[in-house]
Length: 116
Length: 107
Image (tube, rainbow over all chains, first blue to last red; front, top):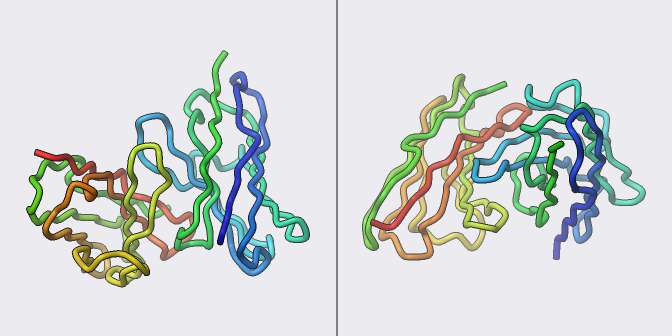
């Protein structure tokens, strides 16, 4: 069974930073691209980041480009999202999902709240 | 980035009805269009990929069609468990953007 478990969410002030992690089991992690998707409270899904299986290629939504960085550790089956210069509008549940781009497996999400 | 636009944003229907949701891409995505269903408090579930291929375990009441920039999701014989929010997503080029969603509600 594929399992994705996000962690690292919480309350952060505007302008602050946070790093999310996603632990993956039940699938060949190093052979699959990975994705981050977020959902603001009461809003729709927003695809924010992709990383290739080897970690050499990444892409970002315009809304987070230059502020967020996706990375992965294939030896530890871990996916990361480093979020800097956080804004109020980054408040959302953040999901990791795989395998990209067909998102058949999702984590339960981790809530990030940006507020002073 | 490719922009995805769904219509309508919300839809009211009755049990037993057939409904259609439209998704339009800002540029051609050939056949690379996927549909997801999301229920409150739950992660999304992939229903259809590559325009018309049903994900394993998804009932045949769901169907998809289209190509290029215009796509549809049709759900026949609505049942109570089908009332949810539906999203299209393009998988032609990263970032793999979603439409804004269509909330299907019981009339």
